[in-house]
Image (spheres, rainbow, N blue to C red):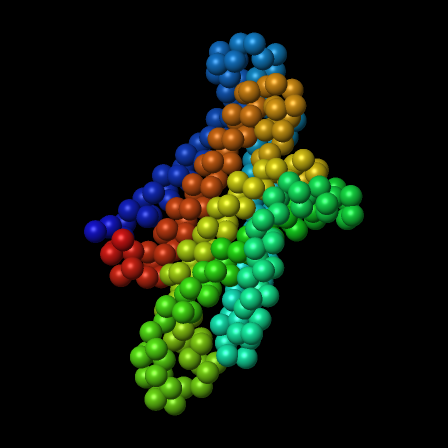
Length: 249
């Protein structure tokens, strides 16, 4: 049985490690010089790591918000009797969006709408839709018919049943889909720097182009820790929203 305090402790630990790394990295030139003596400039200094983390987070938050709203609305629509005929069309659109690599979307979007955050936003939204939509459908389908019958027997309308019965019961599954979408987008956002977006991918791309492994390591460490913090945050949210579910895992 998992203690409810474990998600909070893991969240605090991972957040502390991220903040410590952000503080220590600008002062770690000597360390990376020893680790990579063949590199002339072992510490990435073209941008501050804190500003890159903030820009990375803003891009992920914006794309995830759009993906959650769009994927949740689409899943809700095709789960209702009036929208079930659109389920095959939605499945096809989601399959196409997931089949297109983010690099390909960036390569197509950048010449059309310009370089920067916009093509990155499009790529991340397309890549984040599938987990949210599938989780919405699975969560709503997991609500027992007996519960819905009791709600109807109490005189509740369909919108009231949706907001007060279906969505609360489906919340753990919905949150799992959002969790997957956000964590995937944190890693995927790093490649957005190939089209001029300011993300933690900048030191990675500069390092790869200049054969500077130290830069690649610095960017990768921050991306990995950021993904871990986000994952632990959703773990904590799940334990808070559904403590009985978290205790049974």
